[in-house]
Image (cartoon, rainbow, N blue to C red; front, side, top):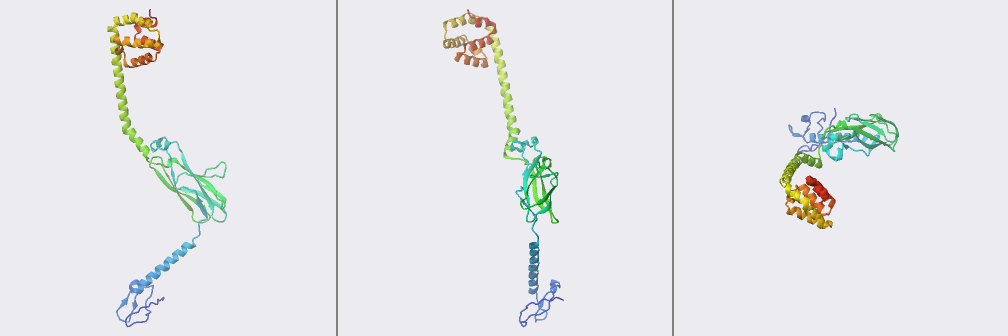
Length: 323
């Protein structure tokens, strides 16, 4: 039976007492003192601390003895993002991106490894390619031969259907199998962004501002065409009611204007004044009046004549060839 020597000093008992077995239950671990019926539980506490230290030291020694990984990763990304068109998640449904790829490198830590397998778990039909091979051949499981310390550059591609909707994400691992050891794992995550500030602003604009702008635009166009129809109708009535006055104006007064004002600038000013004096000017619809002002004030005689013919077609001959 294993026994433990503990120093149990006390009044009337200056020396050690050998009467406790570390394999016994805690309740039985006591170091008897000279005083009958008296027990000191401090040895049990000391035993517990010593046992913990021994166990911790054993575990640490095991960790130190665990061999290092045979393969080393480098240049790898832990997270990939499926970028939507224009970088706006609101346009994710229009994305034509079929996959997301990233490059990484693997190398042997020391000796050359005759065979190394690279595959994935939890990442769907992800494919791997050795970039040293021209053209690279994609495979779900890639076999590397004679991997040395210089390493190999690889590429992994994840299909976009793994994250079909904004906000979706998937997590998995790239596995490297070398020898009989435990597979080396590289965590990898793929996500499709759910929202961004620009997309949120765009969605707000489409949902709230755009309908309001369309309403204003439709109301403005409706008002414009309604007013234009009214102006054209008033002008038609004016031409009917003032037929005699218009006939006299274009039959005699217009010809006189052309004879008395030979210079383009003089003719334009005289024509505008005459149209105003005869109260024809305010009857012309706004659109045609603006065009007439532009033609008259830029001295475009031919353009002015054509516009008058369009407005007063009944006196076309008088306008074209005044006599």
